[in-house]
Length: 266
Image (cartoon, rainbow, N blue to C red; front, top):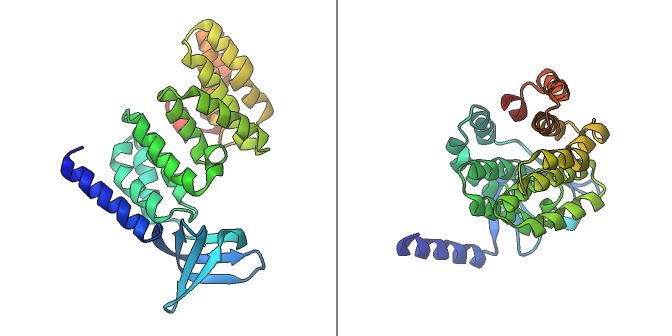
C-alpha cells in the first residue's frame, strides 16, 4: 500500500470513529420485544450497540437488547452479486458485496454478503483479507464467529492462513451452541482439518469417520450443509477406492442439489 493510500485509510478510520461508528442507513422496520414497531431509515450504532431509526426527521434509538426482529428488504445488488458468483465470476461481485456488508451491518443482509465476499477473496488467494471482512461482522456480533452464515467461511479462511487452533476453538463453541447447522458445519470442518494435514487415503478414511459421514447420517434435514457433506464424502470415498459409495453420494448430490455450487464441482 502506498503512503497516500495509508493516509486515506487512516483518515477514513478516524472519521468513522469520530462519528461513533455509525454505518449505512437502510429503510426498514424494527419490531421491539414488546411488539411495538419503528419504521424508517435504520442505521447501526456500533458504540452504543443500538439502532437509530429516523422517521419524519425524528430519530429514536432502539437498544439491541430490545429488538425482536428486523425487517429489511433484500438489496437488489446482492441478488446480482449472487448471480455473478453462480456464473463463476466472483471477482466481479466484490465491490458490491463490500458495500452491502458495510451499509447493512447488523441489518440482516450483512452476513450473506460477507459470506460471499469472503469466499470470493479466498478464491483469489487473499486469505488475510477474507479474515478481515469476516471479523468486521464478528466485532458487531461475536456469535457470528461460530454460528450462522459467516462462521464456515471464516473457519476456511483461518485454516488457509494456518490458524488451526483458532478454528478448533470455534468448532467447540459451535457444537456447544446447540445450533444444528453450526454443529454440522463444525463436523465438516473437522474433516477439512484432518485432510489439511495430508491428502492421503488414511486421512480420507479418518475425515469420513470423524466428519463428513457424520453430517450425512445425522444431519439429513440441514439442507444448507448437506450438499457440501455429500461432495466431500464422495471425494473421500474416491480417494480410498470405494467408487460405488462415491457414486452413490454423487448421484444424490446431482439429483437433490443440482443448482448448488457443490454439484457444479462434480
